[in-house]
Image (tube, rainbow over all chains, first blue to last red; front, side, top):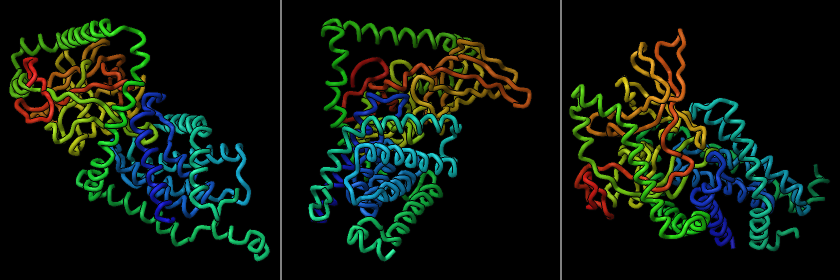
Length: 170
Length: 304
């Protein structure tokens, strides 16, 4: 079961990555696309807790860092998504999260994730962008992620729940 | 704390990650960052990048091919097949004519000054490998890179010039068997040697790292007394051995000029000719006679 779960999670992350790179640029706003990998990690965090989500965040982040056309310093998205998986996983899990709670978690996660990535870039002097531009990108990415939440989070969360029925709290 | 634990039972185990695991993950991330940061261009992560590219590259190509009919639907509705053929032919001709006009100053100067030495001689004999953009790096990653569906099988290698109908697109960073990663000239890491067509002054074009409609380049001229005029065209001046950029490719036109007393050089803002938000078909400049898995467009326009 555990191997199946890991496999399904990796497939979900790969699918999200490919959609993010090859399909969503057609709808992008100034090159900013919804961060589907982040949404999958948040979905995992809300159903399976911070430990699983942090590991999945690491896997998704490394994939984002290495798969073409990525060219930034590797490990930056990995760090951002580990933090996202941990933070989103700390949301209470004894009750099934309400729609509002899910949207709020996605918003917070998107903000934290993109910000951690941007700050690591500033520390490493990777991009030479102004703070204003960084904030604009973070804000647009946040809007995109919230917009995609109703379409991505329910199936992802249902999938992770089904994979672990004994721990499911439904 | 104890009561809390009793209340939540084994839920607590689920909700509390082991600190050791978290520390290990964060350390792993920091290790990756350090390795890649210190390594520079021959970073130990390049093999991993290549492996990821070999796996994700074909998947990206397949996905982009699968969705292409759907993204082309609005286009298809606008014009019938035959009209679309005419339209594309006219667009291609228009782009070619625009390119000629944009290079006119440069060409005249080149003839007058007879300075078409080695770089120009090389630029006469190049061929193009056609490729399509199959993946775009998101702006959240703050780098402007794209994946194209031609790799080492098509005769590509790092540091080749990538152009399209309108002008300079960028250069190849790394290749896998079937795909290549291209650094766009608007990326903040990108530096291109540029020449103002009218005055033949040389300078360096720096990307601003902004994609989309306000993607601009900054031109810094080497000679601080030279002032480029508005609407002057900038072309590449090319580096030795034709790499990474071949010479004489139109890059963009001057939209505004800044000069400050403190800075020792003039700075001009360049609007690139290429629309980086809507990149699709591009050509990679390869030496004539390159072996490729697809038809190569030779310098005289024939297919080789």
